[in-house]
Length: 94
Image 1 (cartoon, rainbow, N blue to C red):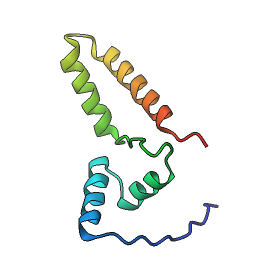
Image 2 (spheres, rainbow, N blue to C red; image 1 turned 90 degrees about the horizontal axis):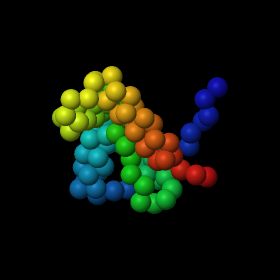
Image 3 (cartoon, rainbow, N blue to C red; image 1 turned 180 degrees about the vertical axis):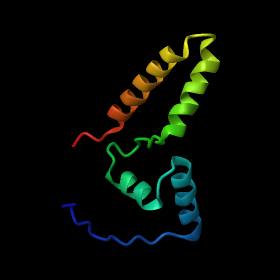
Image 4 (cartoon, rainbow, N blue to C red; image 1 turned 45 degrees about the vertical axis):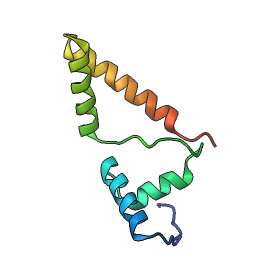
C-alpha cells in the first residue's frame, strides 16, 4: 500500500509560479514534483537532472557530434554510464 502523503500549502507570487512551471516543464516533470525534489534535496545547491528517453537520445547525439566517429554502440554505453553516475551522485545522503 502506498504511503499516505500530507498536503503542505505554499504561497508564491504569479512570477514565482511561472518560474516553477518553466523549470518543471524543462525537466519534464510536474510542478509538485519539482517543489518536492527541491525541498527534500541535500545539499541545498544540488541540481535536478532531467529524465526521460529524450534526454538519453539527446545526450547520445551530442556525444556522436563531439566524438568524431566512435561506433554508436560505444557512445550509448558511455552515455548510459555517465547518466547513471550523475543520477547516483545526485541522490541525497540522509
